Image 1 (cartoon, rainbow, N blue to C red):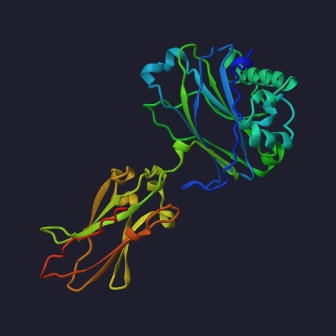
Image 2: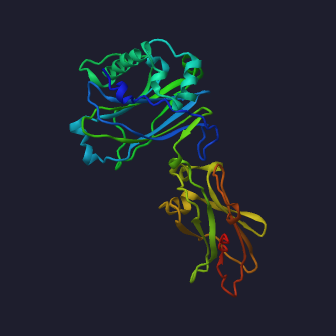
Length: 351
């Protein structure tokens, strides 16, 4: 019997009701939550699962990690990776048929307001026990490998730990599968360890409309701007200093963008576009990623001439910048007198 006892019920069917778009998230659907799993064992794992409603074909991306244990603490080789997750469609509840759409939507909308026992009763809970046991045996358990259940879609027996890095895996859902599953999926988390109680941070981006994001994980305000521009002493070359004025961290994904999607520092000279440099090109060490971070870029290939009117500006597609007033700066070149640095005025303090 899996560890889903009435006294310590571990099925967390939370409401997924906020439909606002998330910054930097191409999919409309987002599940971003911290999840605590308590002790279990191989024959009786501690298990939680959450509904994910997919509304159109597309890619589901899984960024799932343990935040409270390192590799040294877990010693995965000896413990044989006790923390696992799987992505399944709703047939896993009884092993055969998809849920009724109305029932799935009721769970997703209301289950956080009531004890989950009110929604999982009698035959339904017995079906969950059986399906989870079948899934566990098929993927992890028996010496003789069984055929994976039809409702199994994606999984990972090696969850990223606090001191580890990995590329988030993904799963693509096409129109045919969407018709088959009616967009009803669950993320399932297991703990097989008798001593360790992992704290998961689960971030799942998916093609949908609903979101569930813990308040503490809500995106922080982003504000990337130009702090200063001037001439380097000695070389006389133009430099521009950028700063992360906001509270939010700039994601690696923003650095990786190319072409028209890239965040770019652009120069305009005497009203004509001169060119620019991408975020990855001007900040290779990702100093701007953290709040307060600064980086200075020198335009080595720009020959300054007396009277040049230069505008530096930030082109920021798909970047939710909260203060556009510091995304632009102007200056005029004077060769005889070294160009004095121009600095953004300090923001006015609230009275």
